[in-house]
Length: 507
Image (cartoon, rainbow, N blue to C red; front, side, top):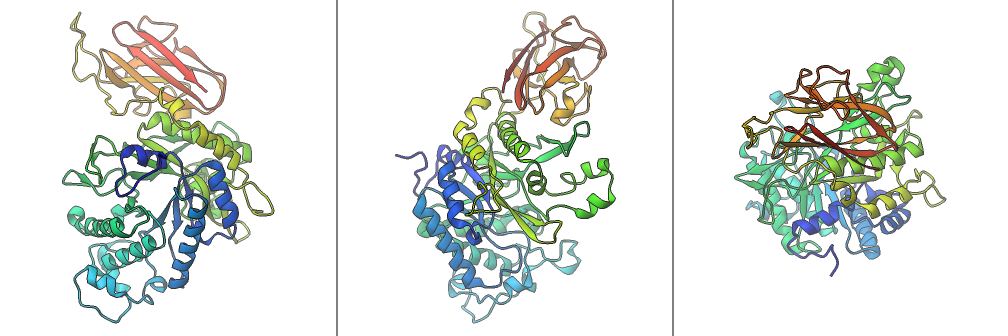
């Protein structure tokens, strides 16, 4: 039986199989190169295509929209029946997409309402004008909004979609005390999916680290874009990724308690490059303006091909070592917004060819990384439960208390998102693993010679290094850190009572 088999239920092992073969294929359903896109999906072994259908603004032709969505889903599933396609229901509604849609009888019936012959009321879906929210943001506490969400969800399920990205869920639930309304809608769609989805199961994610009510997660897994830290000492527009929280736990929709639910990272889009920033901001100012004056995917697409390939490798390794529950949705297709020529552009991983003249030629790198997977790197990863302190434990022989804060510091720190020689950094703080031992793993994007040491209690007054195991103060007795290859994983282990430091590396 295939690793991807499921029908009705989806154990975590199966869910992780799909997330470990995930990509963001935004608006795949309307792609002008769909046949070539499907070729890439099959060639690379992708099994989960995020954001494959949905609207943000101005689709207009409702029936045509779902006809295209179904046609694309049918073509994908003819090529590989295992693939899960995800549809989107976002945190923005526009009048032209809502008020012309007639409400089907099944929607009224699902909510126990008398059937009416009318369209959706756009204004009834929004927050009050004085709520202080974005003026196109739906308010899920409003019944009309719940009906709209349910309606679109059912239409996508009927079109062959088995997953939903629910956008910035913490925004449109601002008036939804206890998440009762969104919980109701998700529950209704889950029930519909049990009867009508291709494999009697639908998945839900949203931009959230945790959405748990009464101990139960409303989402199957949590999802967020990456967080970055710019580098100013390297030519070009270099940046590194920085960990932001952990995936919350709870009872999964499968009824299993999880200390941490699976987590999916992505390169997000929200408007493309900020051309004003390129013309009016200094190099340093632009570095801190989003992703060097753009959104994530436009920054990525703007790098040279070799740098893009390197950053894909970096993103997978970074995910593997920083979040044992995490996976990376590789960019397969993503909107870039308006370019310098004023025309909308799209990133596609497809190799450039007559079938896809706008391809960015990264399908071979994508295939190689998916085949390698996460397992070779997770063995050097940080612990699943991020326990920083010594928990007031004492050395059994001497009674000496283990420190609450231990930090790896040195010249390498800016390349993992911290300040150089910051002995008190939270970014490079070590995790306590018991018996007076601490560990921390990080990914070095650039080869070179660096230095490092260990500060105990987060102070420069009690440090040790591989070349100076006797405690010293300051930064004058650092140990060497030689990185032979770009994108090398470094794991530092420290035994407080013996001052022994062990370093493992894997490129």
